[in-house]
Image 1: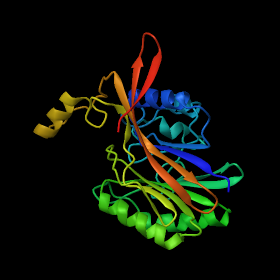
Image 2: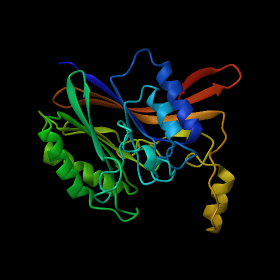
Image 3: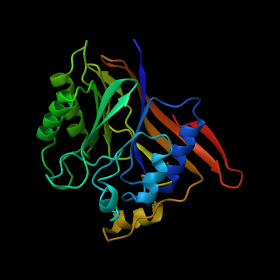
Length: 281
């Protein structure tokens, strides 16, 4: 049975994350079947400019998910309706610009991608449980065979519970509709990748950005803000190395068959334009 390889990258954070992911994709021996990346932090750590979206859109990434920071760069309102490969969290109120899911065709296989926000320790938002259930039925009606979900949430318990609920409600060992559930938002990769009832799962895919940092941000400003509780503007960390976190998933038409964490360190030499890849784990 023909397999499809899916790459999912955790939150791309600032220029180091953008450069690292593009370098990584360029280093691969062949083009990937389908690539998803969370880019809510792609522009200086908060939000996404049209320039950065267009640049990443030409780098081999097929679908862009986001989160609560997608609105931080105000030009998002000028282009989100026409950015066909970009989705924002599904469970914003009706009338919010953009779309919460998108359908793609890969090797004659209809794939749906849903982006949704959690509610625990997050800003007030509509219920992910109800909105996702309705969207899954809509995708089914459009003959979607495989669904992937980016659940952008803080609490690990919420991610684990929601994933288990979906895997048991929509999947069997022989036929899985939800073939991937990937947690994002915390920027720290978890080591719990598994296949649940035909669904590839990880609590948090991690992030792509500066290594010598506090989840991509500069240490000194992070320290001041966290130790004093006073407002402080976060800055993207300067680092000669960037990490790439995500997962590689193999699926066939019936289920996910494999999930493997991506954890690499990318070293760049700006003068010589060389890129080397070292395993980070």
